[in-house]
Length: 458
Image (cartoon, rainbow, N blue to C red; front, side, top):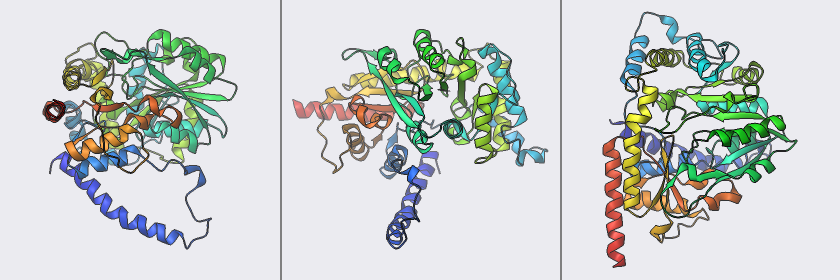
């Protein structure tokens, strides 16, 4: 059974199992007292774009350019390491390891990030490992945010940010990136923060800002001068910066990724978030980490030890050995996966997708980093039948596209708060870390659809 077949099967099984359970829960809940129910702090966080569109893609057997995972294997040397160690002679690989991060892994992470940060990093007190970047972000919000604290979120944002802030009792404050061009070719640099808007968002109640760099879904790589504006405001208002940098190695030629933690005065107030799943194209491994000052790491560690406790030892050991290899070939663009992934593997895929989207009448935002691409669909002028919901146009459009054209992507308004959803409604998000054959199949669908539209209009 192929990966796509397994994925579709899992969603179909989930739908069959949960439907009667949900129905039973709705029935039985009417008999229970109002006390026996979901915690109030979770209200408003029930919907999840990945659940809906993952299920929809599987149900209609669509070409999946929606969710951000490859449909091919991680690098072979990492797979070889993993296979060798799980079948090796050391039985402790299969047992619990240190709660805050396997010793081998945190030591390698300190060696990797030390030169980049321009400082010596203590692996035991300045590095935390959790279940994916998700686990780190959850630990940040639960470990640092008090009820009533404000947390600035730059839009469009990865959709877990808002519910994580709200469940922690915080108040999200949204500041959007705004496209500065309406015509012609666009790049992710054309999406800009308004200095006046971001300055106004900071006040005495601001506890933190979440900065996703490169940004998902725009692909924006923040320039030094943009980071300096944010850093200055963080220092002035004594604010923590949660720097979600999971796409840090996917930077295209001609652009530079600058860690905000390296700017003057920012190390002591920045938590830098990384991901093994993104770094090694193995999202199912669900391993992430944070690097930062010991006092901020303590907050994450306390939350982590009382929730997740520890992460899978064999995966941590495999990631550690994989990163050691990357450090040994760090200067070689071809051998070092951290560099070859974007420059050799993803750049041609990005360009292939951008070309197809332009040919069919969409306006792609060509990303400077990451593996997502926004496309403006407003010029298509496609009328979508009403699906009976009051959702934004991009949700309705992608439901229709998945069902009728068997092509799945993600609606960007899921990455905006209510007041700013109009900013993303005319876009859709594609993921291009896929086999060339998958991208070609998607291109064929789009071109045939474009020909169909043209024939109807002529």
